[in-house]
Image 1 (tube, helix red, strand yellow):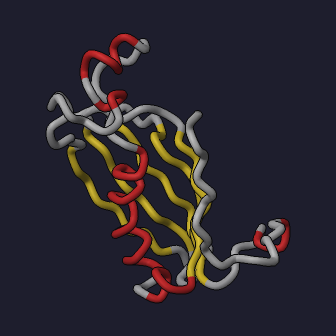
Image 2 (cartoon, helix red, strand yellow):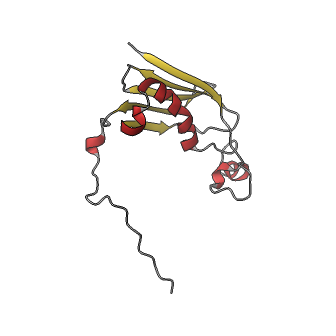
Image 3 (spheres, one colour):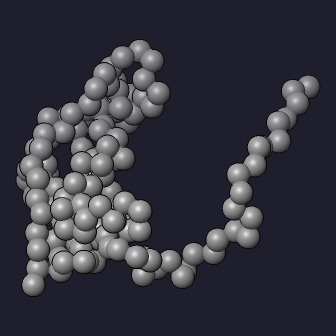
Length: 139
């Protein structure tokens, strides 16, 4: 049995052309100077719009014991029509797709509960406690 959760939305930015924007690629002038059609909606924002579809299929337990593996395929601009889709068997893993109005994928990937299938491939550092960086003196 396959379940599907989908949501339609329109992409937007809040204050992309304000003078103090932290990342100027999200401004019209800088994005266009780099060859984009307009200001870019941040990838983390677009991914965030996909999360409710994941939660619809995998439940809120995914927030504390789930994983996601996504690839950003195409830029998203303010005004783009999008469809966020999660599809797969109940309990996962599920396929993820943020599709633009023309059907092209902005994001593709997978999500599931428990440990990610690729988790054993990662080498975690022995010391995972946060520490303060050494400061450099200016001469």
